[in-house]
Length: 332
Image (cartoon, rainbow, N blue to C red; front, side, top):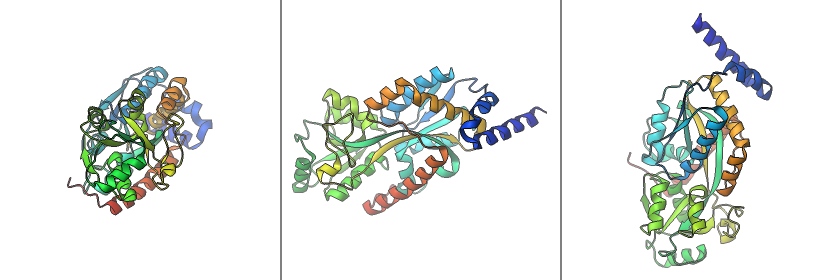
């Protein structure tokens, strides 16, 4: 009888989810015991990187709205794919979720074999943050004030400069490859196990530049430890109005953003999915998150799970074209 009751509950939750906003009240009642324990969130990069920049305040706000801890489980390595594989195999019990992003729509094109499939093994829930990429340099290694000056020096001295990334196949890596294609320059790629370590080496002067999400670079730009030369895209970012955009710098097609999203392992109960979505809505409406996102030049996502799924599919195809044009291929 208990099993029959559980099945009825999930069937009702699925029906309510399909009705849209009008079903929220009934759904909240149906899943009123969720969460009854801490919820685990796999973040597939080391602490201190771009994903952490948004995962930490999201976790803190979740504790306020849901009344339970959202545990950040940092699992770095292999350009974010190691953590994704772990999350894909997590128990689909409504207490395991995954925060990935741009890296994971690139991975299918650069890794010959992955032990998970982003579209098959996960349920897309929400786009949490979207920030433009920014070209940041160590001011001691790169003594220029404009990207045009840097590009001119790159063209006369091929291979003089290097750039760090969050790992081979990451969005930082592909942003660098796209930059090289469009500027016809040669820059050495140095992969790290996350944006955090790459940025620390940039600050230390061990690498010259990083193509980073504005969220993780923002605090270091403001402190003067690194310098922003260009924001990718067709317009300047409100958080850094003095940094020119790519279109102004003669690169109208250089549009790259770093985004972060929330997934659940396939098979996660519909009721838990919808209750998590309600928490996502509450968190996004909070002043704390609005302030944190604005400070980092980010936008909070407003896509439905279905729209997010369409975006994921489109992004996989887009980056496959960049990978093909750049010739990037990883051995494992």
